[in-house]
Image 1 (cartoon, rainbow, N blue to C red):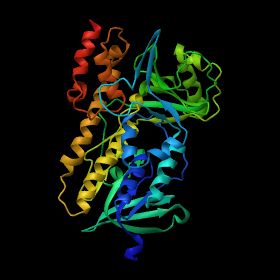
Image 2 (image 1 turned 90 degrees about the vertical axis):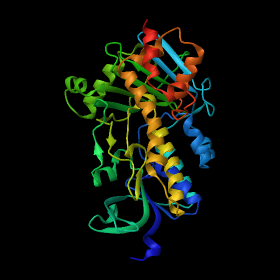
Image 3 (image 1 turned 120 degrees about the vertical axis):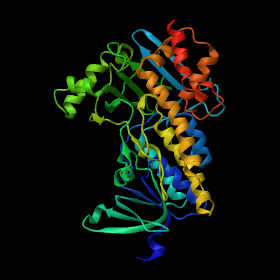
Image 4 (image 1 turned 60 degrees about the vertical axis):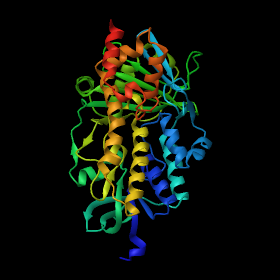
Length: 417
C-alpha cells in the first residue's frame, strides 16, 4: 500500500450532516480527509426539521450560502396541538442570542448539498464504501474497507484519527462493542412523504406541527411541510402499542396503522384531507440509543453514532452538527501536537446540551412539558426561555432551563396548580 494514496490525517465514516461539516472544517484547515459513505447520495433520511442553532454552525463552517441557495422551506418555529388546544413557539422570540429561523429540508437534497460542500473544500468522498474493521496499529488506525463493486475484496486505509458520523449505522459502536441500552423507553416510528394538498387558510407552513393523540399522550405526530407542496408525516408509538395494533409488519399494514392514528388528530387530519399518500411507509424501531464512551485514543463518535434521543424536538441534526463543531476543535489541537482532554473538551460539553434535550424529551413523555406547552398563562419570559431550548440553544447556560433543566418539573407543577 502506498502511504501517499491511502494514508490520511482523518477518516470520517459517513457523509451525512455531521460527517460533511466535520470534513469541511478539517479540509479547510489543510488536513487530508477521506469520507467513507456506505450509501449513494442523494438518499432518503429522516430528521427533516432543522433548528436555528444549526444555522450558526453551518455559517461558521462556510456552508450556509449553499443551504440558503437550495430553496428549502423557511421555518420560524414549532406549533403544538392536542384535542382543541393549540399553541406555538416563534423561535425569533427567544431568550438566547443567535439565529431565530432555519429550514425544513428533504434530507436527500440537504445532505447532498452539504456533502458537495465538503468535496468542494477538498475532502475526498467515496460512496458505496463501508468500513468492516478498525485496528489500532500504534501511531495510527487501519480500517478494512469494502467497495460495493468488489465485495469479495477489501482494501485498507490508514489515518491518524477516525471520526464516526455513521448515524444509525453506528459503525464503531458495533465494531468496538461500545453500545449500551438507552434510558428512554423503546418506541416505533412510522413515517412517509406525501403530496400534502393543504389549502386550509389557518395552516402555517413556516412551523413544524406536533400533535398529541387525544387517546394517549404517549403517542404523537409530526407534520413537516417542504417548499414543493410535499410534507413529511409520521407517528411515534410506544412499542407495545405498535405490537398490539399491528396485524403485520409490511408497508401496507403500516400505512393502515399510520392513517388510523392520523385520523385521531383532529387538526392534522383536517389539514391532510386532500393529501396523497404516494410514497412507501417507512418504519424505525427502537431508535433511541447510547454508548459507553464518545471517544477513544484515536476516534470520536459524532451525532447519532454516539447517542440518539427522540425525534420529538428535532434535535438530531443539531446534536450532530454541534458534535462535529466540538470534535473538530479538539482534533485540530491534537493534530497540531497539543495534548487534548477529550472528556473535558468534547464529551462533557456535548453531553451538557444532550442532557438538556433529554430532560425535555422525558418531560414530554411524562406529561410535564405538555402541561407547560398547553397552559394558557405562561409568562412571556418563560416562554422565551422554553423557545430557546426548542430552537436548539441547549448549550446556552445563561438560560435557567439550560443551567438547571430540572426547573422544568417545577414549572410544570405550577402550570398544573
